[in-house]
Length: 177
Length: 337
Image 1 (cartoon, rainbow over the protein chains, first blue to last red):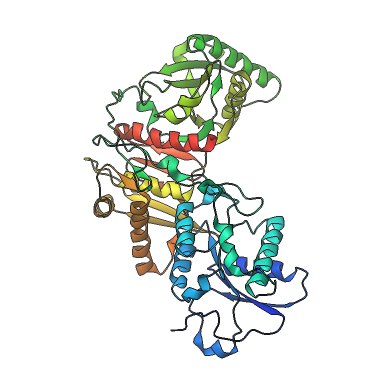
Image 2 (tube, chains in turn green, orange):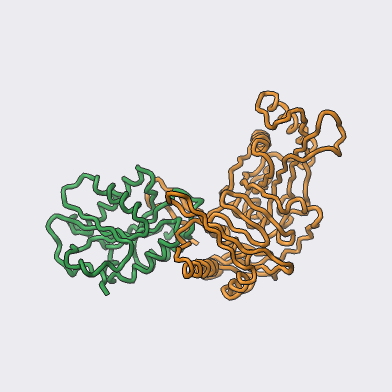
């Protein structure tokens, strides 16, 4: 079974690769377009998948993936289940800062079908940061795109001195102190 | 249970479901309140020995009530109910003269009655429920026996200790408001209360997650009489033509399923509710290949009560009235806080 591994391919020069995994394709497209609109001086390629594992036929054509973003829609329990089953197909060394959970749809509090406790337990179990956003609002979509782009640069090693392992600081809840 | 702090700009904090981790007083035995030591939300049973007179509360049953959450009322005096009724009817008459006509056939006078329902409360710390009734009286006869009720609404607090403990003096805590009747009357009565007691009314919407708690709790209650089916209504978003899915389950099957899922009688955890709903979704998927977990749960109805996500409930059984009201009070309190 094709398991995503972070370091089994060589990186390309001056380029970053993002993989978005989620059950809502329209939302993934919106986010991808927002990211592509950002000003940058490197090449970016965004891959969109409904679930993992990725089809193994095209594996040799696929570049090395720098950051995997799992998108969970708070209005749909199915998206959470989808993400949970996909997580099994990611190699453990990816979870050293190269995986991020993106929870969308938080603007509509009255439509939530998932308990936030379940999401935080998932994030703790997989040692990865969680970002909450509402992609229907343009301002937040742009801000989320900027954040993801920054994380992507760090994961690809483009920022000297900052490693993706430092993303663990994004996970600290202020209540913990 | 940790509250989630929003990590991205501009998002709202999601309501903590710790609020819902409380009692299930459907005639079960005493249990403990609050979270278990492992921090999981645990719902325990409360002994519900309410001597709720079925006759007095019969008018509450089988009506579709619209839910609102109300912030505490300032300087509300129970002794002055008659004065308040007079003021409210004067206010309504004045609004109608101003041209904010409420009903066709404006030859009717509106008579207002405020009364207290002492039985509808959880503990002695709760305030007794307050009932507001508007009835139309034709000008031809002034006998009150000919009044036709046109609108009724009531404030209630059932085990709302969390809110009433911490409020300062002079404030009365009645966080749940239910109304039945024309929306225009609700607006009039609401604006009078807001002006007089400096409170704030907000429509109480019920999220799909809370609806699944309700169906799990209510489906598990045994009723001796022939019960109606447990029905779930889903709406599928973002299609060319909106699709509604009605999923009806035989009440005994639903109860049997819940009995296998629930581990400790008198306690409900979020995991058990999730397992219960997942079983229902998996069964539907096996037959129809549709993932109900991706659709939005819009309405649930059981033999005990039915609830719609827009905040409309109908209570069908007086025995479980305190339990349902307690759940709704919790939702109202969590919306206020």
